[in-house]
Image (cartoon, rainbow, N blue to C red; front, side):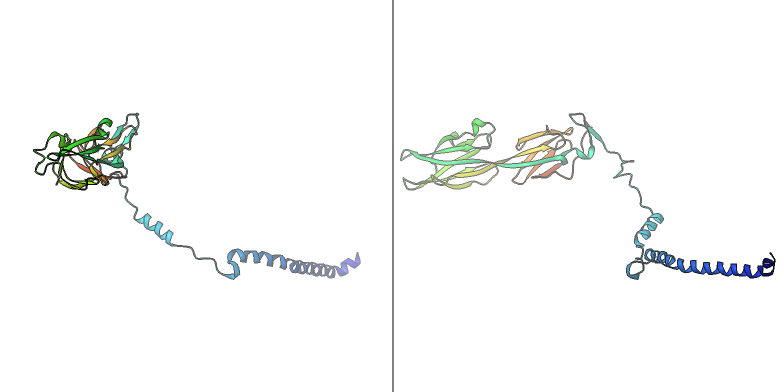
Length: 290
C-alpha cells in the first residue's frame, strides 16, 4: 500500500504511455483500410484513367426551360376538333366512320383494262363488179358475253361511201356508231390486202390495212375495277363511262376512263375528281349524312 502511495503517479503515467502506444499501433493498422476506402471514392468521383466525369448535356435542359417559358399552343380546331367537330357516319354494318374517312377520297382504282375492237381478214368474196370483204369481228367492249363472241361480218367494197350513207352491214356497233368502210383491195389473190377506214363519232377516221397476217386491235374504251375502301361490299368490277357510283350518301358518275385514271363527277355539287390508277384521292367533296 505504501508502495502505491509512493509511486501512483508513475503508475498512472505508465498506463497512459501504454494506452498511447496502443493507439499509435491501431492508427498504423487503420491507414491501409482508410486508403482502400479513399481509392474506391476516387474511382467513383473521377472516371477511368483519372479523367474527369463527362459534362452534362445542357441542350435538353435549355429546351425544357424554353418550353416552360413559352409553351406551345394547343390546336382545338383542326387536330382536336373541339370547336369544329367532324361529322360521323354509320356504314351498312353499323360501324361509326369519321367524316374525314368517307367520300370520293376513299375510292380505289384497282385496275384499268382496255376494251378493244378486233378485226381479222377472213376472205375476199362477191363478184368482180361488186367485191366484198369477209372478216371476223370481236367486240370486247360489248356489255353482254354473247355480244362479245367472235362473229363474221361481210361488207361491200366502196370508195365513196361515208358514215352517213353507209349500209347497216358497215355498222359494227349501233350504240357507239362504229362504222367500217372497205375502200380498196390490193395485194395478191393468195395474200390480199384491204384498205379500210374506221369511223367513230368525235374522232378522226382511223385508216389501216387489213390482211390475213395483220389484223386490227383498236381500243374503243376502258373499263375500271373500282372499290369504295370504307365498305368492302361497294365494288364496281366493270365500271364504264356513265356508270353510277352510289356511296357515302352521294352519287358520282364516271365521266371518263383513260389508261391511267378515272374521272368522276359528284351529282351533289358537280365536283370533278380524278382517280389515278392504284391510289386513293386526297380531296373529297362534301358528303351528306346517311
